[in-house]
Length: 95
Image (cartoon, rainbow, N blue to C red):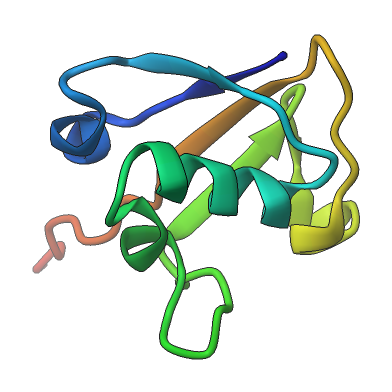
């Protein structure tokens, strides 16, 4: 099984669970299996073309999938996946 850490904004889709388990051979398959178990989660993670949204970061065992094989990154039993929404914004500094 693969442990998937769910960020707070997506927890309403997982009935409040901060961590769920699934079986999948790749990140793409993980997104599909999560969406089957928790309908709507794929729409929050992927755009209309199926690509990950810009503000979604996914880590497999603390490695950013953008530096691995993206959605095709392989998964195996015992892997831990973190879905992390990117944080944007901040205050501007005026002198």
